[in-house]
Length: 182
Image 1 (cartoon, one colour):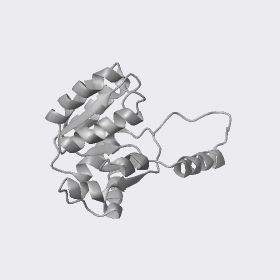
Image 2 (cartoon, helix red, strand yellow; image 1 turned 180 degrees about the vertical axis):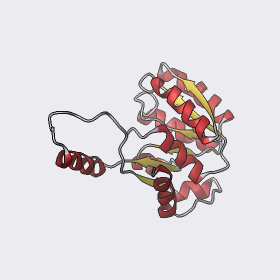
Image 3 (cartoon, helix red, strand yellow; image 1 turned 120 degrees about the vertical axis):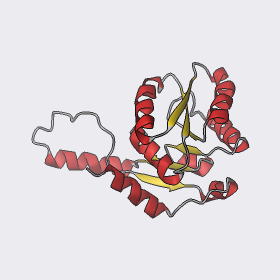
Image 4 (spheres, rainbow, N blue to C red; image 1 turned 90 degrees about the horizontal axis):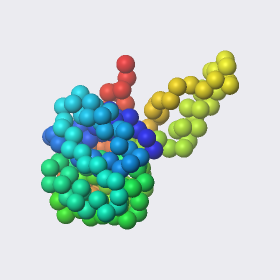
């Protein structure tokens, strides 16, 4: 589920180049990502509007503060802010404020997020097989890194509801991949 902050922000900038304020709700499991997201946001030329939550009761107020201040919301895979109840509140709130949600899975897009960048289990398995095939010391694990293979999903119905003109998925994906090439 974890995609690099740079990739998540690149998706936002590719889909909505005029977005300048990116909202994020940080739960206990994702609080450590805040500094990485702030750095990636600065490099992408956007301002991060973050709110930390410690309990589910914090969600309504934190969500409202973020949606009032941000152009878009990035949903992170944190158990506190990605539970079905929290996801429903986030999607309903974002629709009320007319703020698109960028997520981390196809299922989230199917539920009402505008877009997501994600790696499928098949992507991860293929990378693992490639590593095993090329490894001379199979007992030694590689350093933790983001998946190289990824895909995107766009919810065209949400785009129409928000009056957004979103480009072709293939062209958007090609642009994201091109931006990651050295």
